[in-house]
Length: 45
Image 1: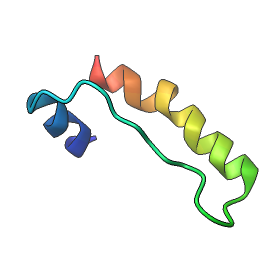
Image 2 (image 1 turned 45 degrees about the horizontal axis):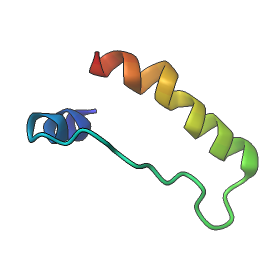
Image 3 (image 1 turned 90 degrees about the vertical axis):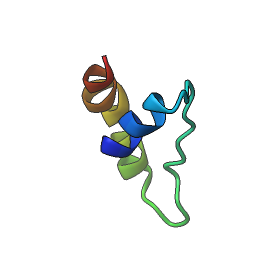
């Protein structure tokens, strides 16, 4: 979160995230992706 907040302070408006690493189970990818709107976005305000 600290890094994302720092990027915002420097004017970054968009962030692309890559969750599907080679060999990563599909359910883990979906879980990681689902955390963005539930955990990250609310903290960014």
